[in-house]
Amino acid sequence: MRYIPAKPMQSTCGAFDCMVTYAEKAAAKSAQRRAKAERIAAMEDRKIIRLKKESTRRLSWYADKAQASVNAYRRAVLLEAGEVCISCGKPSRSGKYHAGHFIPRNREPALRFAHLNIWLQCYSCNVSKSGNQLEYRKALMARADVGQEAVAWLEGPHEFPRLRQDDYRRIESDHKQLLKALKA
Image (tube, rainbow, N blue to C red; front, side, top):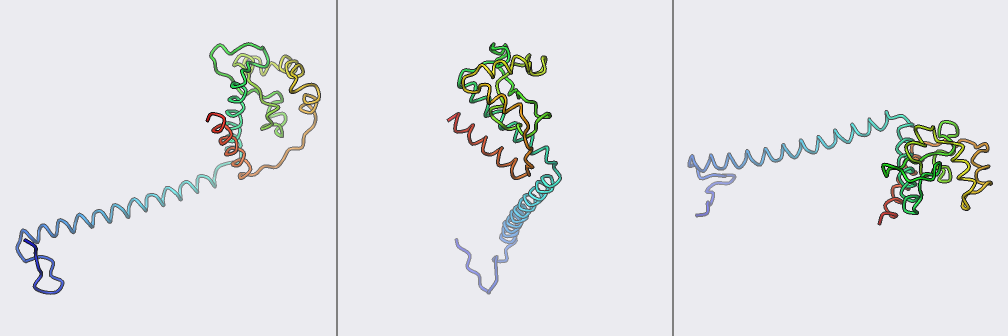
């Protein structure tokens, strides 16, 4: 049977059971509103914390993320082309390759993201033999798509571009999109 209030603003019929049921429903609604408000506040707190973390991160953190993205893309391109270690010419024993830089990043930061400077290397050549530079150079010179001019350019002087946080983010997102397109 449907309840019809006798007075304005009357919410229950006055029976104890009816008042308890009404109070329980009101408490449940109130608890839902509080929980929703707490979730929203927590989301705002997380957003503020994320923004604070980003503002305190060093520029090198963004550069490292961009480098990881460029390396992943470059490895995928070269593996799809059937390339092997550029220094020793052998496939990696573990099947995993490093994105080895011909001119090391610390020696020439301007070439850090240059695709021409990044080739597949096995662990042994990249880590144990410190890049195996002599064999790396010979292999680059012998490649038809690289050649002596490109190697001379890589070995020449370069002006370091002053990259900002936005530049590193753009490099990272561009290479992630390229990698996604390559895998699709």
